[in-house]
Length: 312
Image (cartoon, rainbow, N blue to C red; front, side, top):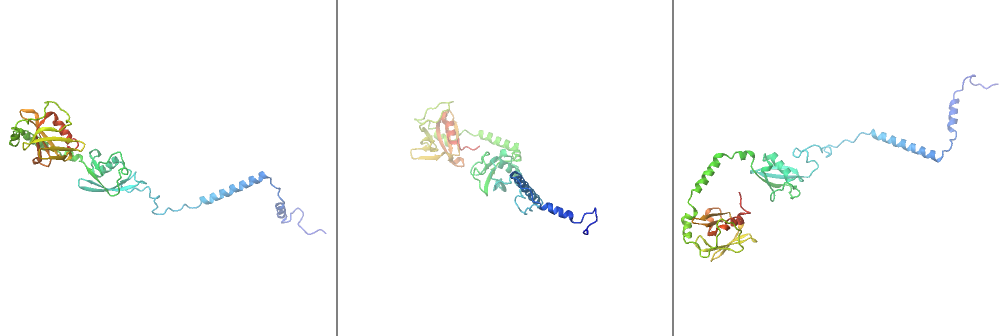
């Protein structure tokens, strides 16, 4: 008797599943070495791609508020375009009795500092004298000249408007005053000088060369009178930067930087000799007069005494 089963032509449910299970459980053929290595590489690549995919889906961390990187592009308003990432220094710019607080990069050059001063004061760079322990060089940086935070920078100069404010009437007045001065009586005719000049030339006066200019001799200039009519000699101590004025009684050793001015005038009737004064104080009362100076040494004396200290 035939066993009960499915009708002919029909498959019994579950037969395919069992066949697949049997096929799956069938022992696989062993892989050789090259096939094993290829399979391992493919598995590793697949795992790496899966990790990258998961990582790309993670949101980027939020930038903390106040993070300097987020604010690096924000200017402080004073050094736009050049201050980011550079060391800054605070300065006090003093010009025309007014102080200006500024902040500039420590590696700015003197030329760049002048541009900054121009933007604050309107003073053209070409008309600025910028001083910090002396004149600030245009080609050196503030770091190189050792500028520190809080340093005071002194500025001297005039704006274009100040220059244009100089008017013609003032110049005319100065010219009139100069013309009036030229009308004054020559010094050699004034009573205070006449009493010395009337004594005549000293017997040991040095020879003169009219119309010539010579350098100072290596020996003292002697054979001259002072205001009291006594003999005087001039010794130029260049190595000590001094002028020695010697008389019979004493020798005055004067630093050349202390002499404010030197004036001279030819002696009338003896134009190959001059009377000369050294200004030792703020007024004409401080003049030290010397008479019968050979004319060929006059310019050399002025250049030696005033060369470094004369202000224009």
